[in-house]
Length: 112
Image 1 (cartoon, rainbow, N blue to C red):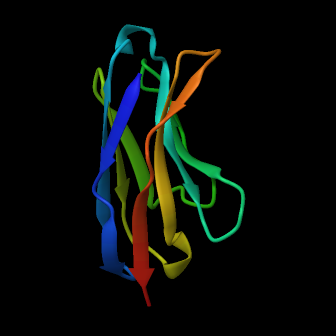
Image 2: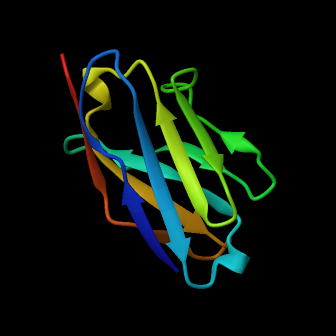
């Protein structure tokens, strides 16, 4: 499985960005798709996950501001009311259970 993410960039605090990710390869086995981010030198953390059936998992830190959606081989992250602390590298991920694939990160920078 290969993942190609796009949509990062520079935005002012309070603004919005939409990240997109397209999966190719053996996509029929994919169940969970989602996004994680790495902020500064911290550990990578999940910011959104969505199952094939549409069940979402959004952590409290971004709930109400981040929304995840998906198609058969795509996953999107809508980020609203962005804050400077949301600045980091965002990674698309996809899993079939035993295996998780990662895309290359896309930089999101929120200026104050």
